[in-house]
Length: 154
Image (tube, rainbow, N blue to C red; front, top):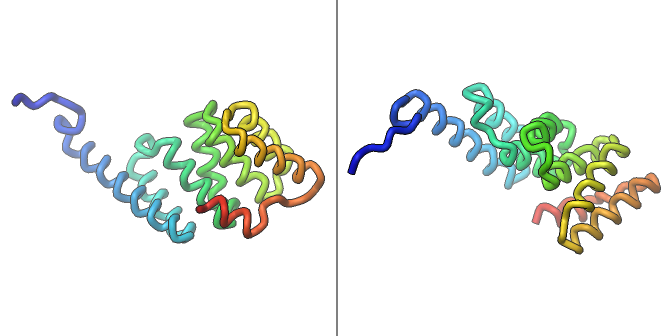
């Protein structure tokens, strides 16, 4: 069977970089599962130093969302922004940024992000949930109790 040339097998250094980035991101995701956000950020930053172009919007979104759910939204806001830049029309990613914005007091922008999600989703349960969040935020209330954040993690 002939070897099909790809950038990985033509460039062993690129393959090693790709594997290193994957390894750091994998370790970061594992730490996020345990709520170890600050430690996870270190692994994401290591991956970014190797090659920021190898980190997908989905990977940044995972850090954004999980960090926010563990009440460390300010620490992961950079990841939320990177995810949206890489995938500006992905309503799930915009929704995660909305959560981070709400938790950091950027209420108007959070409402705008949740509204994008409401208009995009076909999931009636998630739509109703975001509409409740929007109403609460507009009323000056915080819908993100410890119980809600825990529920969203599960």
